Image 1 (spheres, rainbow, N blue to C red):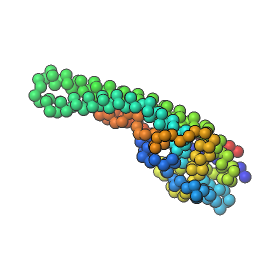
Image 2 (cartoon, helix red, strand yellow):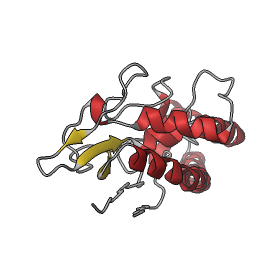
Image 3 (cartoon, rainbow, N blue to C red):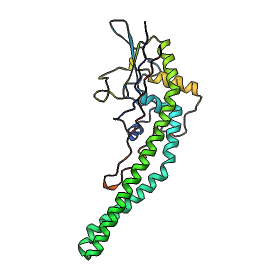
Length: 239
């Protein structure tokens, strides 16, 4: 029987970096993650095809290497976060000044204050977008690098355990094709354990193994806040 391994690594749209940070579990669960005492067994279709699921997003973020590298990325962007927050505070203070003193100012002073707010707000918007784009690019690079090394581990596990079809449960319906799955079908924990053993990377000292929030925070004036990781789609089909 031809064995097809399908993994969509879109890491897509529904989970943001901050959402990944909300759980301290080594394997964030979109689908239910099996415990060490209850290994995945898969599900058998009437035709005899063994089907399993894997949370690819959780597998990358929950691996020791992913936890280490995402943590380092967040530390790298901390000065940018602080800079943007300070600029955001400056804009907010100017808005408060306009609200409380604007009707007492002469026309020129009020006009200058309005222009200053607009200029600083546009600068904040541009800086936030630049920081988001840089953060997103580097986040994608980390994810893709780990995915490239994790794919053979997944392939080996799939073949060794007789799976004919493997589906990505990172984003369930309606964002993804999976409406429901069970812990017995999910191989995420087993793959992460196998990958950690192969990589030799120790768990990071930090208690939180996942990206710890947005790259920039949410500035005033509707400036774009960082979105989640969205690496390019990757489909691997070993025979």
